[in-house]
Image (tube, rainbow, N blue to C red):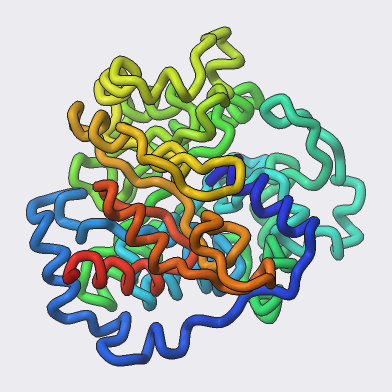
Length: 392
């Protein structure tokens, strides 16, 4: 996830900077610790008892592509660390297909920025330009590789200008398949004695369906194979294309979430079918009622919850949380990050564009709107912020 995230990260990477500031130390091992929240975690859990999504602590902390603030995203290193840092759900992963029909976890089908493919001379001729959801994009694409070929590549940090520390782990992990993730989920559930949840996303489903590589059927087949296609299964499915969620709704019984980008944007499936509606139309009461007919939640940008002014400062919250809850939808907005460039201007510190700001205050502000959870690159920060909020 998501288009807006990509734009933000790319803009900051172009601007350059000195990189992130480590926060793990005291956050993980200090008094109470992330791994030993004891009463804090149970206090949060007490708010949402029951099966399925209601069994998760609230607000729910979702590890965005794992713990991508500390490890290259969509790797088992990132997913594992997200669990270690206390994430309730791990976004594992953004699903894109290979040429031979396997689903793999990459932020985008273009993998030049997230793998070492450019260093593989044998794949130099695979570099090409394609139109991806209306945008000319140059690089290497998963659909041009077999799974065996992709397994020869290794993951690298996507935004090294922001997170140079993460480049320490470049080359350490391979690209995971969705099937490997499902097995890993079961293994971690056994080892930890607690159900591990995942939150995969179908990426560019209209684009891939046109290539004969439909995502939804492949997702459903694997979920059925592993017995994870039921109402209370610990797998939440999400997509920026409402028709992808509608298709999944007919194939599986999993919790489903419609992702929502900027208010003026249009989902690509709407563009392809001539549907004139924008995200602004989808977040009206009528639009939310329609979504509630086939999904259990929405994943809006944080700006749809609390808009920013021209200076990047937060303004007055919208009625989105109240309106969504009124029709029975949960809200899991995206994405909280610790670095200054990704925080509202209210919570930035100092002049270093890549230093950490005050994410705890930002979390508190967003939690106060009544959201049910949030995606974050820094699950440890999110867990501590939730403890402050719940116990405050």
